[in-house]
Length: 245
Image 1: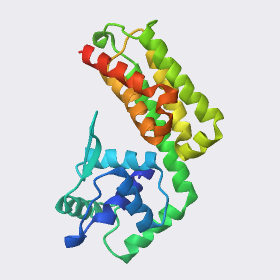
Image 2 (image 1 turned 120 degrees about the vertical axis):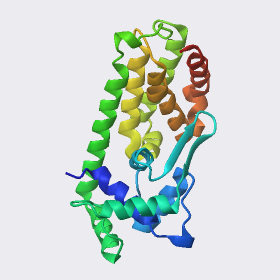
Image 3 (image 1 turned 60 degrees about the horizontal axis):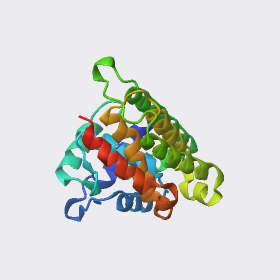
Image 4 (image 1 turned 90 degrees about the vertical axis):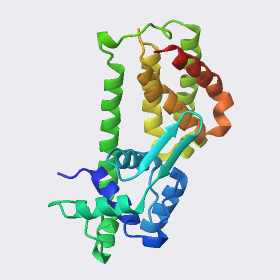
């Protein structure tokens, strides 16, 4: 059975398939969102788009890289997108509809269906919760020396996360700016707090749960970086990541 993310991945791939000499895949999330919003007459949520892009990167449709300092970048080749879409459209029961005017109508109907967006949100939220559980469950063979528990570093990080959570819950301006991402931001901030309180920590968990969250929310709320103490926390994390082998 096709999942909501399958429809979104198919629609994005369709958008850029068979563009020929007009092919110009955006190299960043902001431009990709703008292009898709205009093409499909929608306002796609950043978290939905990021999830779809990560899937497309894993299956080789596009390339998505994320650097600690350079940030995020996207790239794609016309042949890769064309070949993938053509082959996927040949599968029975696929949501990759053969290139035609009917394909455009198909994706328009999907995006006009409010239940699609509800189901997409539920699917992504469920997958995020599953990923967090996997990352916080550290096998005995993979345990490392505790550097956060009952430490000054842990206190600084928790205070920053508490400020973020408080503003997301109580500051109407922040909550409005966060939009549909607000529940996810709060959930990820709380998960990061639990990680900091743990008896041990892995490098992958620090990066996936805490570091990436702080990078994303600081990019979203640049004016709050100082108030929330994010710059200091990111410096602490850089030092910690260098220590954890």
